[in-house]
Length: 449
Image (tube, rainbow, N blue to C red; front, side):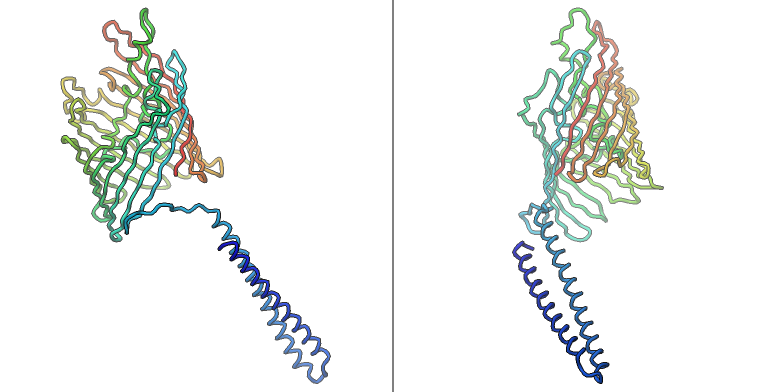
């Protein structure tokens, strides 16, 4: 309702109140006339007077209710004038709904490699800056078709910057995350074609603690570009150390086949269980089983996956999985993940290793509680241990912690995380393979739209 309409409504209400007062005055005059009449008509006049007084009271109650409605309408009109509409996009095709959404996630990264302390303005690779367009068309109550288009836009990704490679802040890295179409039936399952998550993607990252934004089993996303510096020997130069191993090259969570061009099928849910499989180029394939449920006030989620990728030097067979539980009343949660490469004894070429020689495990206890009225607070610590990921015999370990504060009214999450990385490598020839620990801290915010 516009302000002009509200004003007109109020004037109309005032006129009606004026008529009511006039009628009230007339009724009062009648009361006085009746009071001065002959005593023989007193009973009849009293009844008439009571009736008129009752009518006057009903009229006044009606006017009060109408005045209240006018006030409520004016309040609603004022709120509507300041409210941002939820949908501001429209599909160009009939029968298709279009949703535009995304997020910006920026942070400051501090990293100490044992020799230098460096600061970087980064895009948090745990959940990168991105924009997405989602189209949906409902064919029936059971069948839906749709499209997903999502692109990632990063400057200085936290998983790649280091003191030898600090990108120009103006240089943006664009990467396609999703370009896919799907056909979804509650009865028969979902078929997806195009570029997007494979069935095994996310198998090592199931987590209900609410802290995946700053710490999770993928260690490289936090500060993966940082370089391990060897303990100094005589003649060792800083320039040569730029070729040393990085965090991203020596830590992995074997999280499936990520996002690729594939044909994927997901079964319908059955008592919380669901299975998925996908076929990629060059005979690569994977399969996964998932579960989501709730028992005795405890939320549970888990996923296990197998992936086969025969493409060139990446020839591998890997098994990975994770599980998480959250006790809703106390906010206490626990997450566990593990995986290995060359699962089931398949060969990985001349340098084949058994599954136990190239593996990792990860554990994360967490706690979430309502300290503030504006959003829940999530806290967790974690520990990661792996073997043989960089080279045979490597031992890589990491310990970290993080806190995420939600601000629900702003669709915002503010976070702070820290992590210490340790790499042990068997000596090779005359090369000293004792590396300094790397300590890193990440603080920032993610705002969704």
